[in-house]
Image 1 (cartoon, rainbow, N blue to C red):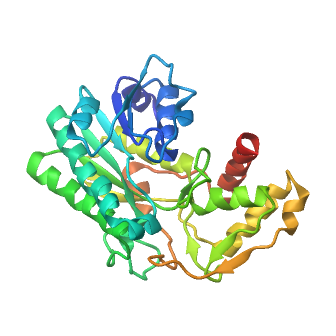
Image 2: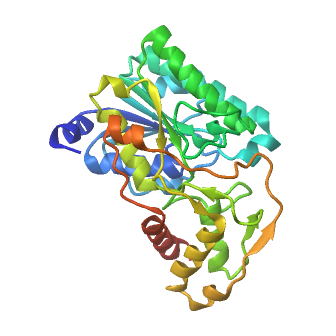
Length: 332
């Protein structure tokens, strides 16, 4: 990021929705460190107040407790804002299968509320969390942005609808948008607890307790695991880009390598064993495959590199080392 781009961030007022969540809170901290004015919106459905404890008293930070399903809350949060980083959503494929109505209310109706509020407030650019689940049953690898399949879960449907609405708001209301299709993001502050915890923090906590994690399937399924700092970089580049060709489209937000679940658990055991030798002997168990799971996921990040000058700095190994260190120091 050059000096002009950093100055643009410092002089901007940026709204982060889902600000108390894993990705949202990391974005807020980075923006505050840069010197931006940050407005944060969250209803604590899945986020935690503690995630914002380091910045809550900062004079450049304003927190609004509200729900994106409430249009008035969205209007309040968007007032005077230059850019929106929309992270608020109900994640998890299994959650959406168990309760498709709530996932739709938050991810579709809430998303539409945020688009309307952003349009009404004259927001310069609306950047939102899209999802790799949009690729659905497409078997092509690597995943390229303009070739998707049929969604395999209610969650995937909601995230694809987000992309359709974003495109429509550009054509209808001239609101510039950028969608970031996140691929299995992990890192500091990701919640290891609850029925819908992501695989990495869940496995880390189980290993630290000397409990055997359960892999769904035989462990051959693979993912393009993406460290949080790569995701932060993509969001910031989407704000500062002055390339008009880079707007009103979607980007894979990933590293561009895939790791099987068997390889993942081997790495986790190796890195955690540096803190506790006993973890090396913890066995891994295998269970049935989950409904709606995509067997393999691997992103092409060529488009992001070309149009947004994206340069992911953390591969799976360097990202896992950072994540394991954070979990050991903060949650042991």
